[in-house]
Image 1 (cartoon, rainbow, N blue to C red):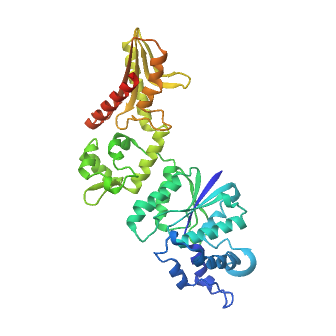
Image 2 (image 1 turned 60 degrees about the vertical axis):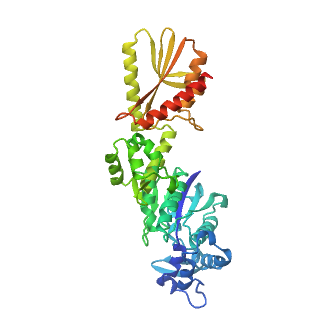
Length: 426
């Protein structure tokens, strides 16, 4: 089912208190919500975790009865009615109303880490159920822990990360960003472009919906791949006390000082706590996207370069070993194990695995058949040893890099490959 992710703010409360609306009510029909009450409900100590039905129930019921239903805006004037639906009750609903048949979608209402935002989401859920006939099982409220404006550090390290997580976990969604903190609109727009999600937005009093489609943009992840060992040390899920010092991080970069200055200039990393380095919000977004594409083995510029390198190696063997059987991209076994370069000589078989030296997948991971360990212990090389006759079997790992391979990379490769070869022999 298609999804709509809606960021939820507090406009369903604040719109009711606008002077031109509130003044229309007389003493008897006036809502119980006041500016003073609203100030108490939005107090910074009242987090989503402290939401209480006892505190909010009366306001939620009153808003539904006197604001969502009971008053409408027609011909530039507010009119009282018995049961007509007020589509202008909040920014979130006003935008959703213009998207189309909402029953075709699963709805994810994401709230800030405040009790009033969670309360607003509860009211919006009731509207979706009653007015748009959406079943409750297709409406989900997600509280974004740490997404608040009172503690900037918590917003950056916890709130923004949790916001990124919930959106990137829901692929092929529409982002309705009319509600919620205006400060997160730039973040949401960047996420939408990286994840290729369409954005919907209505600006304040406007009636026109603004649609921002995914732009035909491509992000060059080469820099991350070439310096993967360094980026691995500052990956998003690392705790602050485990992040590297500036000098340690710099020494893992291919071009040391030049690369560090470039990363700082591009705002992919930042220095904090005197000498430590961490990813910026933009850096976290790009790193997470790179890992996703890499694990799915999705086409990229780096993959294209790998294909060129493979072809050059194949060309070399083809020209220099005319009596041998040389194949590129040979598939073997029922599982169609792939071998980059396969050479069969009179009494020996050589298998060449071609990888970028910045990020060589060595250890086997769940659902990843592209690692060296998997190739040796379960995949292509093991199949060759068990099913093709030869006196000698050779496994070569060909690592290419824009400069000489880092010493640390070489040592890591040697230790793991030796361990894996011993495992295969046993």
